[in-house]
Amino acid sequence: MTKQVITANRLDDGLAVFFDTHANWSASITEAAVVEKGEEADALLATASNADNQLIVVGPYLIDVDQQGGKITPVRYREQIRTLGPSVRPDLGYQAK
Image (cartoon, rainbow, N blue to C red; front, side, top):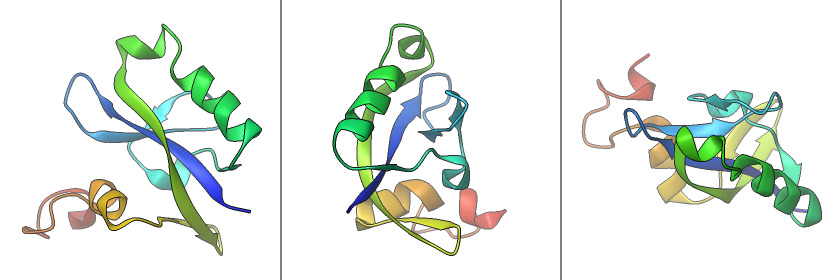
């Protein structure tokens, strides 16, 4: 079955963030809560979209991911770019760290 995580953009700086297992937002996809597509994912999205989280992030949504050997990788290229940062300047963004 397809695995998913929740992503959104943080309101204070616009960075892509991921909903983690402690109901917090993390800039690292490695800390994201991974769930099976379906009811479990929908329930987690409802939690991530609550009124308290609307003060922290905008537009939470589910993305499909692959999880192999503890590494979480977005399936779609768009989400890979959001995870890594700018594609034109590899010296900037998350991949520079």
